[in-house]
Image 1 (cartoon, rainbow, N blue to C red):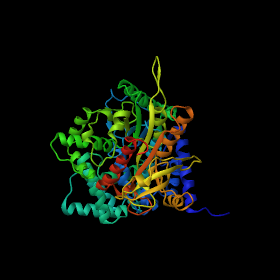
Image 2: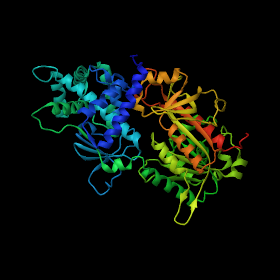
Image 3: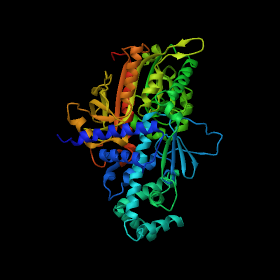
Length: 565
């Protein structure tokens, strides 16, 4: 029998993880340290995602992956033994504390010190994301347990010292802190420098955002949980994950997306935009606004507008409230999401923007704007499969008790953050197709964006994009295969294929025309094929300004000009 290649094994692991996760959701309960949880862990180890680095090495605790997960899970997750995934519940009249992670718009509630509830509003992608993080934390917890209990006569001196530090709960500094970090590094199988870097990273987020419990406490608590689970005399229940019946019934039903889209379309109708050409843009909620309103706001403040658009950005960041106040007087409306979808929307009537306030580097046609009066519907990023649900609902007509209203959607633009395969952070990718990982579904994209639309300030690549199951489930061998084989994929992202699926469905149903313009552009937040450039290496920072604003500028120029210009 022919042995499978590394990429084939990894693809099999991705399918296994998805299948097991789907089965557990239907089953309703599982223990991460039980047989079902072990199967999830086995598939994740076999996959060996780049973002989790040394997770598969039993001798080493993966610190960068730990940073990534802790930033995306609610504070206190490490001390919980009961995790509940549910559909939207009404917690407003309870004493339960809502906790939002530092880097993920994920609504969760602390029911008690050892019980936490995740409210799932963004579909299967959110479930896969949470289960991946839980599985990772449990794998690392077992490593810590084995390191702490590798002596016949009990726990190691390093574990006892860590326990003393955590239980005393006093602030360490100077030589005492150095000694504690050195002791912890031995327990983790990492160097002093590596341990120190993670300690300082988490400590900074703890002090500035109260977003985690600090490295000492996190390591001790997850290790202690496994130690308690292994003790026959302790009697504590093991970590268990529950899926409520309401969650299982909600999956695939578009419950939150329907509420989100209905509310947005009612707002557009209220504003009288049902007869105006509408252009949907999925992007961040600052770059389009800042480009269109930044120059006017700065002029109103008596500040000289820099000729370089990128040089204008730092000035606007210092005046966030002022640009919002200026914008609302010039056709700008904020539509806050109240459905639970976590997707706010900016509605922009371009006809109310003063011609003299348009930035000199933004090449748009004022006569076109006066004649066509385009309306921009800028929606915040969706998350994975949620993209299909919200776009599918948005492109449907709006149903009122006495009438049905259809909107004139003329273009859909998607500006996303993605991993790049041939380039580096800050480069730009233009999709010619979306290849759905783990399925036979592939979508050709007639992209209205071309490489020649962009200046030479950044490198621009054009080709197929892989729509992946999750950022935490990516393997170097699979990505290398997509890149170097006849697929010639240039990047990976989570929403594009789902958006395109909804667009195709809307064309078939007659909700939009086949001539609708689609535009897909992504800026590279990471390169998972290059060590040190994965998502776990940290955010882009200032290097993200140029590609973000360049893509926004090009999209606006496509929308606000006659087609042949």
